[in-house]
Length: 369
Image (cartoon, rainbow, N blue to C red; front, side, top):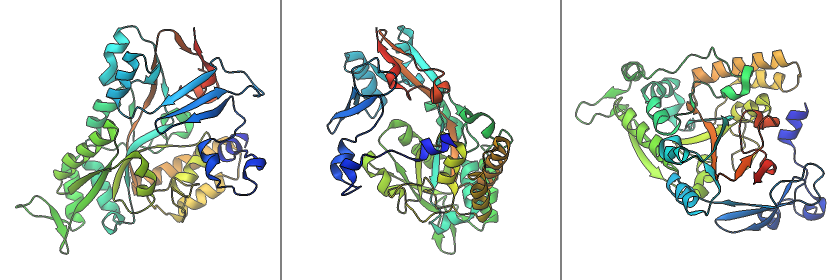
């Protein structure tokens, strides 16, 4: 219960927000009770300073600056120039850094990376189309490019959640022939002249958004090439990170994203798959697929009210099985969360809460020697 409350509730300062809980200045410099305070913000950086009034362990570092370096090339350049001390480690692009002796800290991420399917699109409301897209997608190629230390995913719940992850979820095969057969059975006829399918005068066309990071652009390109083989015409639209919330809160067809559950996986599944009229921008939900299933709702409504771990695990497995069949989200990989640091920096954060499975949760334990 404490995990659920900690992941869902936040303490807000009454003296700042009593008049207006949506006060704009608070968004820029929020007031919290953690080991760090926001003391500076620019368009490209956020400055965190140690909270001298923090009740717990005082951070090793007096200040940490979070700098915006959206792509791997800029992160590596900043690391080598001395501008950045800690960056996300990408094995396929940064193996040379590791060979030079820079330490890498790794763990399993609690997120699942994949492709969102917007069920507001009438084409995608047909589960057969969604299943065909999953069968036709070359997910292994995406893993080879960006998730070499991660695990190929078949469920919406990461392996990092231990027994809550259902190992019996049917693996998603790469089967273009099977995908073509499914689309044939759904009435989508292939035009041999164009290579594009159509049904009732409507072509099988989808718009695939791609965010600036290379992994999302590569996933979009892989989807475009994979789905062309099964008669789906995909148009890629590149969009800035600032547009993500707006796009996935509206109508978007297809988009890549990493979906992370909360510390309590049942609470996370409620946010991810429970029926809702809320949008991502409004908060409180990750159900950006507009997925709705009464059986899933009933299971989650039951599980959120009980504390018996075994019963909650059973519900988590049942929900994953239904999500696998419905396929509102095509999982690609459970990433390995990896950070590479300068040789004089040590991340003392393993086996502390969530850091028992990953790194990056307890920056108060980052130390400059």
